[in-house]
Image (spheres, rainbow, N blue to C red):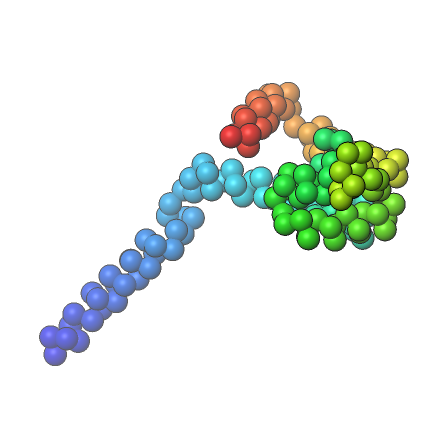
Length: 165
């Protein structure tokens, strides 16, 4: 009988513990880190949705953008900048060549190497991608008042500094 009398109290303790570890939003305000992470993820998702050509993968766009911003380099250098293994980058470069966005030429001093560079079509593609995303973002920014745009300008500086560390 004593066991039955204690059971509701025991069940309440389990429910309270489950609520404490669940991180329920209505009981605990999310941290700044959590809110910022979610906002960045959502914004990134919306920006990616503005893509002009879905036949080019995000990995390919990233490698192409790297070449666009940093200039010609070897496949190994590109793989290192992108943080992938060289065999993976070889496949990415082959796909970019298929699209006509990148080309290879012999390395000037090392016959075993090649230099990968962006073609004019690749430069045009990167510009179109950036332009589409910025047009979408410009429309969203136009809906904000001057004070909100100033806050976002300062936040962009801070986020850029954090990302560079």
